[in-house]
Length: 145
Length: 339
Image: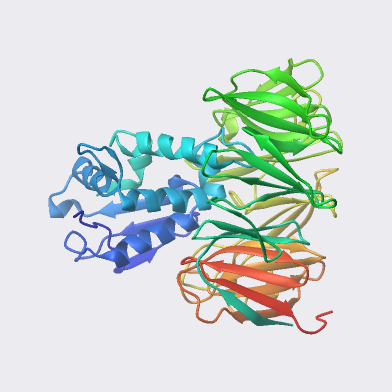
């Protein structure tokens, strides 16, 4: 079982002058889990047009580091076990990205004009590579302050 | 006015050519104008104008195309069509041993002309006999289909990352570029024959970072956006003449202020702007229609029984199709004149 880290129930606010979301974790942040938070993350992925518009802020007072949180996000989306690959949640995140043409075009510059099933499969593989490493730029939406 | 006519569940995606409508179900069945045409595909089909409809097979990764006039289906194998060059000719990508080759395919004679092998860039636009190509978001190139050679190359990194190659209108090539670090979004006008930057628009304009479209019928570029917030905020519409680069309109849509509608997705159709909007919630909950010229709010409603946000909006044949986050398709039909 993977824990869901994301708690956007506390508040989701976008700052004036910016295009995107800042998600700030409330007091329940690290404890909170469950499908609602995951659905909320998918919902945000459907709304943003670039991962640069999404920022998850975690409170440093909770004694967490960026790399710890990136690792937990990775575990949610990617299974490092004997059969490595996307978890069901990871696949849902990919499908949400894929259904948001603005966002997928921003993540990959070489997607054909009208990708077919073979292309979708190729980019799912690329997404796997991205999320399997916490060093990838994809995880830059996670911030600790 | 429109009224809710039908609701379908378990829909994964929708597409339209303004006349016909296509959807794919979560059971991976593809329907075109309510007729099931294929099973085992997770994608929607793609329309080439009103003449052709392309779809993909998930079982063996092959593609097929339907001639919508004759209803004949052609099997394309691992060739994926990208742009219609002339009546039967398509710019296409052929998959060979995991690599993509750029070819020109004649649908009737099945003749293929190889232009370039193993391409790893994004083909963004066909302008006469040239393909406009985007490499790693920064470089734009023009590839001649006649000679197979590049005619120009330009580095646009000082403006940010290339987002969309919008249109080539006469000699103007319009490109949307985002610089997220400085929250600066620019519309660049390049000379399509040389790649030279002729005009940079963006300073003082609240341009959308992604939802800028070329309205072919009007020969204008349209940016229509609002901020995604729970508090009242205006929706800004910017209209630019694509032939001259002149800013025709840069205004707040006043008619959306009182009902507190903040635009999300939008589509141009028959001199109207159809949009999704949020009001007091963070997710889009409403749809509406504006007159393109006067920006008068002709109609709006909250989409009943939606779940999550409204993730896609399409308009075809006097119907509005709204897909919500869980896959419920809400179909609204025109019931009276809204002129």
